[in-house]
Structures are given as C-alpha cells and as structure tokens.
Length: 500
Ligand code: G16
View 1: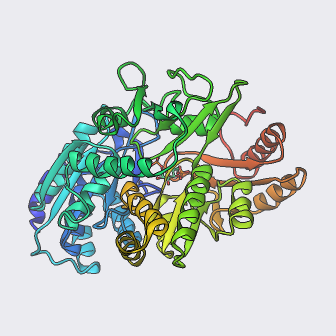
View 2: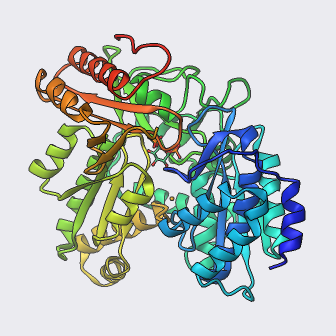
View 3: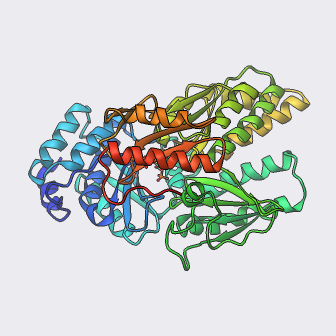
C-alpha cells in the first residue's frame, strides 16, 4: 500500500472536522455535500475487500428513497449480497478517521481482516441519476486507483443491476453476462417463458403502468421494456423529464401515504406499480370500479408469491422447505394469514435487506419482503439442482411445475443487498429511553387488533413510528399518541406531532 500517495490524494477529499457518520441500514446516507471523503474512502475499502475475498466488489452510489439532495454509498459483496457485518464496522472506522489517522486505520483493517496486499483488486461502480452522483462516483474511482485497484465504471445503473454484475463476474459468467443486455435478456426470457405457462386472464392484464420515481428506473426500463413485447406492454410515468426524484411519487411515497403517486393516470382496474429512486423496491396498486385504492405492498407480494410457490411445490411433491421472512413493519394480518391459513413458517428480523436475506438463506426456498417493497426469493443450491433435474426427467404435470419453478429461479434476481432510542426483539421493543415501551404498551391496549413500535431510521435523521389497528381512524389515532409519547419521553425537538 502506498500510504504516502493515499495521504496526498486524501487531502483532495478531506473529511470535514468532527463529522461522524455510521454505515447504516443501507450504507452511508446524508446530504450529498458531506459525502466526498466517504466516497473516496469507500473506494479504498472496496480495494481491501476485493483483495481479501479475491473477488470483484461493487460500489453503488445512491441514496435510494431519500430526497434528491441526499446521497449515499453501499458496498456489494462477492455473491452480490450486502457487505458483511464485520466490514460495516471497518467502513465506519475508515469513514470517521481524521485525516492524519487514515494510513493507520487502513493498516489496522488490513491486519485485522488478514488482507493479502499483493492480491489484485477489481471494483465495479454504478450510480443513480442524482445530480451529485457523477462527481461522487469519481471520488470512489480516485480511492480505488490510489490503492492500485482496477475498476469498471458502469455509470448509470439500478441497484439490482449492480448486484447482478458483481455476481456474474464472480461466477465467471455462469449466473449471466455481466452487461445490461445480459441482465435484460436473462430476466425477460424467464418472465416471458413463465407467463406462457401460467394462466393469464385476458388483454387488460397485458399492460402495466410504471411510476419510475423520476429516477434511474425510468432510463433502464425504457431500455428493457422492448424485451417483454408483445406479451406485456409497459408504460412509463414520472420518467425524470419533468419532476423531481422521489417527490410526490415512487414506492416510498405510495406506501407511506397509501395513495397513488402524482403524474400517473389510473383507470379502474388498471395494473400500476412504483419503483423507488434506485429501483430496488416495487409496490403494486389499482383503483377498483368504485374508485377505491388498493395497495399490494411487500406483505401482499410475499403472500402471493408464497401461495404460487406452494402450489408448485405440492405439484412436484419433493418436500422442499419454504419459509417467509418479514420485519416488524409487516401487517399482523399478513403474518397470521401466512402462518394460519397457508401454514408457512414466518420469521421476523430487523429492518434492512441484509438481515432478511441472511435468514431466508436457511430454507430450501426463502421468500423475503419488507412491507416497503424490497424483496426477493432465494433458492438453495440443492433446491435449484433438484428442480432442474425434475424439469428434465419427471412426467407431465410434475415437469410442468418444475419448469415453472426453473423460470422463477431465473426471474428473481437473487443476489443479495436516532440514536436515543434503542430497540430489541427484531426492533419491536424499545429498551431506551426508560418508560417509552411501557407507554406504547398502554396505548396499544386501548385499541382492537393493534400493534405499534418505534425505531430510529438507519437511512434518514428521523424516528419511525408504526401503528396498526382495526380501522383507519384508530390507526391514525394510535400513531398520533405513540408519536406524542416519543416526543415527550425521547426528548423530541421542533414542532410537536400533529393529529391526522
Ligand atoms: C433502505 C434499506 C431497506 C429499509 C429502508 C428504510 O431502503 O435497504 O431495507 O427498509 O432503507 O430503512 P430505515 O427505516 O432504517 O430508514 P432504500 O430503498 O432506501 O435503500
């Protein structure tokens, strides 16, 4: 490691004095103007991680659902999954080291993680459409090159595409071709095959309206939509030509406001969906003939997918285990339905794809979804081998089901990615500050079929409050009372929470 060169370059990406940031739910996130040094240092870290794992590592520059002024960075590990937890700690140490300590921290990490510094390093980089992203990804490149790493800059890419590229490269192309065309081809042909085999009700189900959150999803879907033709016609809205990223649109807006985004025309029973700012979340919705809005969020998507998979698994009858992983945000009725009606085991983990992904790997087939629309289905290697074998060898009905499962495997991009309050039990119980959990328990008791919890966000400087009850009115009221309890007991600042 040429530490002198690092020190010289680092001055050009100097850390603002005293600024402390944490590798959070999805990497580092904050206002874009505070991130230059973090990007440079994540370039350095990606080189060390690449040397240690002898694999390609990904760096994605995005702040996903956050406002346009924010930005962020997350690292992608060799199999396309989120960065290992022990390296999140290294990332936090490196990002927060004062300039003069940077060389020592780099040496420390290399020693602790037994990095072979003679190894070659290769890093691939992607970025979203935020105005700050191009400059910030150049800072990542500066970090990579000063440590002698090689890189390939994919430029504008969705987060799932970057995960895919990393895994393709590390599987020597076995997972697919590490190009955007390779990605479009692999996923679209699995989709086209699957929909040929699956029952489809009439022409109105062949159109999909997509709200692209004025982000990267619009550019990439504009390229990809031709691959679905003529089976599926995709229409793009909020494509970034007019509106602002994530503003009054996108998956986060639709989920948290429980209403359609601006900028999309919806007629009764038309199928619509929304991406978020880096196109790794999706929620579906429609208006019925009475104008009532229906949201198919991550909980419902997980339930639909699990029902479909369960039918196919019964057909092949091979005893493969199926499990569903959710977070505390999952609506209680969805959990009850999965457990009691579908008889599928359900597990709850902390918020963050990395936690759900980990748990889902324990099953032959693990379905995981956050209510906000992040998720996928994971197939174990053994399940995949079994399914491929049945798709070739078994007789009619069984073979048909196995073939459908085979396409599902290819369709799901399986690669993995306010500190006064602290929580436990998969974030469903507050342990600090004292008295807050008791207050929440008392409030919850006042309503039927109710649940509530609070947790510090790992991507924004806010505390999130979740509430559910038997009616919208009661849910709003419970949410308000819990917010008030947080404000009073956790030292809230600024305006008091308002009802409604
Ligand atoms: C990120 C994470 C998600 C998480 C979301 C909100 O999403 O990838 O797993 O649910 O943040 O996290 P928090 O409640 O901690 O702010 P995205 O789409 O912004 O990358």
